[in-house]
Length: 77
Image 1 (tube, rainbow, N blue to C red):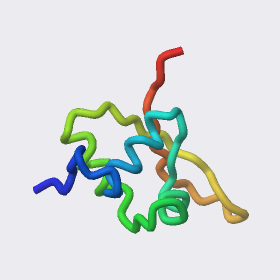
Image 2 (image 1 turned 90 degrees about the horizontal axis):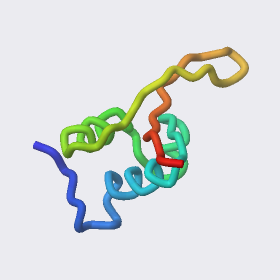
Image 3 (image 1 turned 90 degrees about the vertical axis):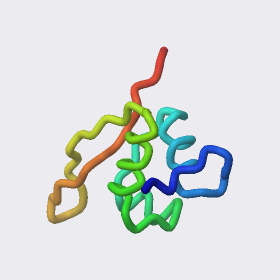
């Protein structure tokens, strides 16, 4: 069952959704720093199941060139 509650602005899902809607992209490392979110993929799953069109792309990060998921929403210009 999804923990998504659009009426709770303090929930991780609501904070992540607002961040993505502002045109920012989000990696698991950034989600941990900004929202104390250990399972970004789980939060994205919740939001997608709630009907939000969140895209995924691969991003290479760090000195060791690790590939991680980067989540974003397409915004209207």
